[in-house]
Length: 296
Image (cartoon, rainbow, N blue to C red; front, top):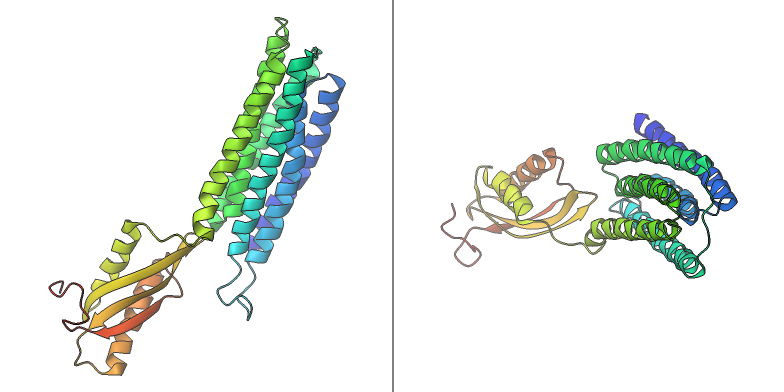
């Protein structure tokens, strides 16, 4: 119940906060011809979409396993995280297009303290949301909230460049505004890249690191009568590893005794919190089966 309440607060904060910032930045940006602030505002429009994706993805992913999804729905978070990255790429295209147009047309910049006020409010608001979502994402092991936090962190930095563009206007450097907007585009693209780099390996069932495999083998070998562990095949789902592997036990043991050993191995591994739903294949420890006959 507490988790559901926290995620609901996070979603309301994201959607409500972004709606207010969109109104502020687009109105001020259009009134004073600030392409960097309009770029920031347009990015916040897509943040509303991202916040919606985050809410839907988190809600679906917490459904229990069913007949159609026997391993659960957690990977829906990865799909919606990828959708967030795609919205960032779309926004960067339109912002870059507007910025280049303004550079070519030499459109003047209108001085107004409202631009600085809007940028400052945006910076503080996005930073608060980014910190909150980042901590919640780590606590819940939620890629979609972590992806959204990265997005808001970039937005906060973007607001700094809006302020820089404003300072440039005092020295008649009109090109500061579209130039800063292009820098914002680079930041947005980098954030999208970071999200994709985080999500794609899990979507493609990339295998674990050598450290994870060593940890699994160490725990399994600590159980009495486990002679060897090999053919480890694991995949990660939101940082938790599932899959199968083989353990070799003394060939003189009964099926029941060998099964009890495998259950102990499974229990010890799943107690760590980084393994779950493991399938253990039992084999006799013989020269024909052992890959490391002198291991134990």
